[in-house]
Image (tube, helix red, strand yellow):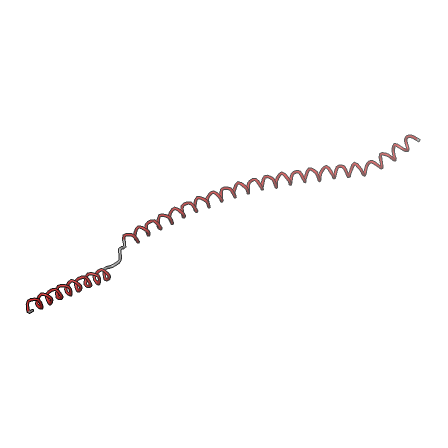
Length: 115
C-alpha cells in the first residue's frame, strides 16, 4: 500500500504540475500585446482610401470650376447679345414712333393737296 500511495501522490503531483503549467501559459498569452499586424494593414488601407478620396475630390473641384467658368462666359455672351437685341429693338421702335408722328402731318398735307 505504501508503493500504491506513493504512485498516486506522484500522479497527483504530475497532474497538478501540468495544470499549473497550462495556467501559467494562458496567463502569459493574456499579457502579450495584441497582434498589431492586422490593425496596421487596416490603417494602411484606410490611409490609401483617404488619399484616393482627396485626389478624386480635388479633381472634381477643378472640373466644377472649369465648368463654372465656361458657363459664366456663355452667360456673359448671351447677356451681351440680349443687350444688343434690346438696343436694336428700342432704336427701331423709336424710329417707328417718329414715323407714326410724321404720318398724320403727311396725311394732312396730302389731303390738302388733293382738294
